[in-house]
Length: 354
Image (cartoon, rainbow, N blue to C red; front, side):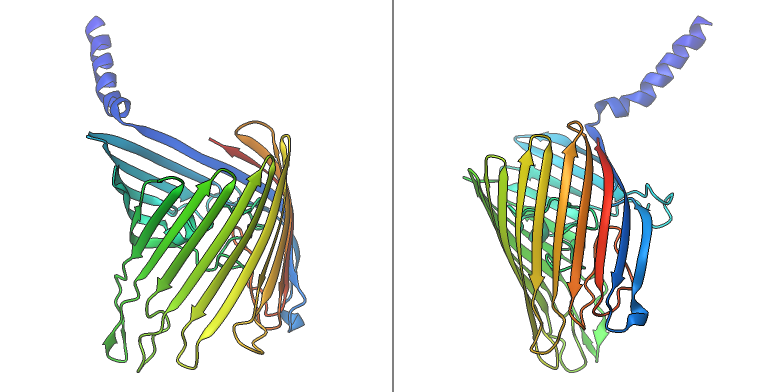
């Protein structure tokens, strides 16, 4: 009996050893809300989406990350993160490593990451931006809506971040085009790259970014048609108040003439003890005269901290599309929005982070 017990202890110790030695953190968030959404007022009334109630998982996620000390101030980094479905048992989500997932190195030179990760245009250039209802349908900063249309998570990519010096940080991202398709006999390279910098000092934050997808609109006879974005963000925090202003410009090169579209956002957030209330407005102009593809979005949200890890929240968001525009919510989203319709969402929810 004693020998069997000793054997069992030895086996258990052997199996546990790799986990005991590894620097692994499990983290995530579960954020679920009850909401009602609709998109009515379409140019063609047949394309209206009537009001529907639903439970949304928003951006609930599960991740694993860790590091390995290599000595001399160097360490290896890794992360695997994915979205999880709390509302439908994984019908829409559940694939592994769908969110920021990478392996990399960090040292006095800064940080280098390889994998599937947010571009620096997305992660750095929006420094200081007020966005109270992030990762819900009321998120004001998503590519499908009015602002942050150049944000992306790059596949097959490499990213570099400098260390922060006197409040200043810079970065660069490059996403490889592994398909390299042929258009009219010419081999394309639709690689995407970003440059960004941010500055933070006391209550002031500022961000600047530039993003280009090469040859995105390549056509026979002209493959050098790119899509580019530029973004500038300013934010200021004093006491329990945050204010922000942002500008984004898109240039979409077309064989029939370039399309240029600018967007602005302004936001304010006020904390009252455990409660934070935010109001954000964004507006996007037409891409050319008479295009009628501009849109506005307004979001009002409130968050109540039940503890350091648990929050309840409520939000209202509305996008007003011009006759030819089809801008819509991110997150759980609202698909099939008809041109000229106005997506509207109202919800309450709860979030637990771990």
